[in-house]
Length: 183
View 1: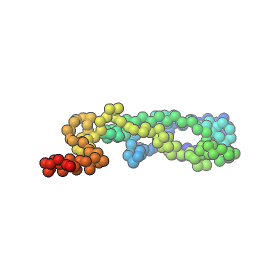
View 2 (view 1 turned 135 degrees about the vertical axis):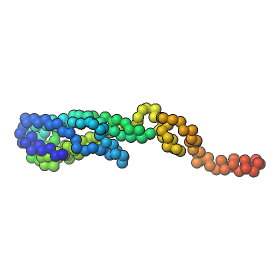
View 3 (view 1 turned 180 degrees about the horizontal axis):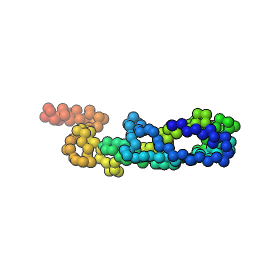
View 4 (view 1 turned 120 degrees about the horizontal axis):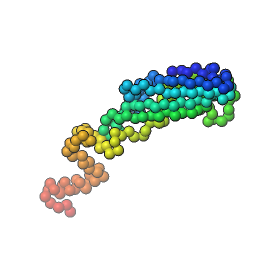
C-alpha cells in the first residue's frame, strides 16, 4: 500500500497518524512460507511529524503474530514480531546530503509516497528469529522413519558410522569373515 505524504513534506509542524492493516498474508523465511496467525487483525500505527520542509519523522509501532514450522520437528509455532521503527524520511524537495547513510531514508519512498508494505516486509525479515523451536529441548524428527521424537520413541537405529573410519572397519570385517587375525 502506498501512503501519500506530499502534504506532510510541504507543511512544517504537520502531524498525521494512520492505522494500517497489512495486506500481505505470508512472509517467506528461507523458502518456507510463514503465514499471519488466523483470526488476527494486525494493526500497525504510523505517525508522521514534519520536522522541517522536506523532512518527516516517521514512527511505526505494532505487533504481528506469524505461524511458522519448528526448525527441528515442523510443529506449527507462534512467532510474535514486534514492529518499533523510527526513521527520518527525506522528500524530493529537501536539499540532498552528502552523507550516504541519510540516503537510506529515501529507499522506501517514491516521490512523496511511502511503500508501507515493502517497509514492513523488510522490518519483519530483520526481526525474524534465527531459529524457531517449539520448545528448547525439541528432539526433532527421526532421520530414519520421520517420526516426531517429542511424541514417541520409534526405536530406529540412528547410528551413523564415521566415514573416516571406513578403512579400519573393512579390516575388522575381513578379519571377522575369514576367522583369522589380520597380520
